[in-house]
Image 1 (tube, rainbow, N blue to C red):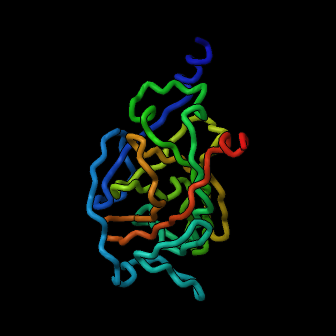
Image 2 (cartoon, rainbow, N blue to C red; image 1 turned 90 degrees about the horizontal axis):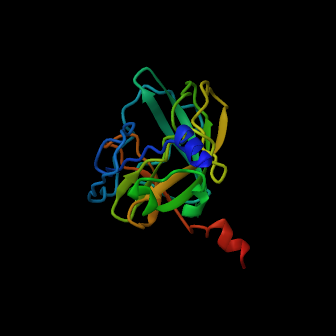
Amino acid sequence: MRRAFLATATVSLLLTGCSAGEDASPPTPSSSSTSAAKSPASTSPRPASTVYVPSGVALTEQGSSLRYGRSAEVIFEPTRQRGSVLRLTVRSVRQGRLQDFDGFILDDDYVRKASIYYARVTVRNIGRGDVGGVAVPLRGVNKAGVLLPAVNFTTRFPECPTRRLPATFKRGARLTTCLVFLAPDRGKLAAVSYRPSARFDPVTWTGTVEEPAAARKSR
């Protein structure tokens, strides 16, 4: 009982889903999801922006599909007043297990019936702006094209330590973190996506999903 009480007092999982056709603005708590048709292949020019792109930096084209381990250079503007150029790398994705949440009270069917994925991600600021204090701007995508925001933890989760960008994240700053995505109804994670707005044809990462750590150890 003591363990359960501590988990309740210190842990919160904020879950939401939005379709790939909706604006990827910060999520609000919800367990509902709606699907959307895939975005057409993009030949659109770079979106209008006042963010300075350093000389020698080539922005990754909208609609690009990358393999895990590859990097994308993208403009990121968390607010109208600030923005920069980020180098985003989805290094790998591993499937998790419900047992990884031992010690957490999971009283939501959305969580108990979800497939769990851990994405290792590196973010580097290669622009001029400071974009600190916000969540890493990546989401999962399931087979139906639904965007899956990363789980927001209010306590440490050792299996996949998740961190926001630090309060100050200026040029040259680098962060390596792990993002937890939940695909509802035992669904599959099809990709990890950078989609700052509904008008942006997303940059996506795909590749082989690693087995849960326990499954590898048992071999």
